[in-house]
Image (tube, rainbow, N blue to C red):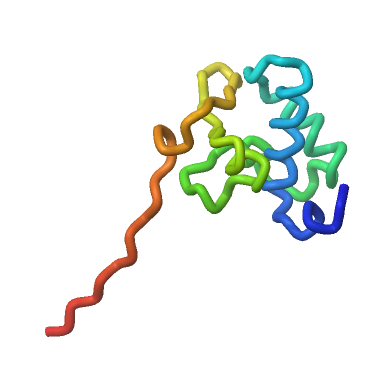
Length: 103
């Protein structure tokens, strides 16, 4: 891992590794067993209270740089399965700033 990757959050590091594994094998579907394996390889499961929270991503800023550059997001397929799909705009949303109105 290079210095830039080490500065990323643990969640981003795990997502980046999962994405890399899926790219290498040419199959973008993965399961919870792979999530736990990758977490163990990076930091050990004890860092996550719920290791499956790593795949819950509803904001773009939670995605690692590698996924952003290639326009990929993660979705849940059910029964412990997930998939990386192209088209971040179809999965996540950029929240607009909240405007405060003075009375």
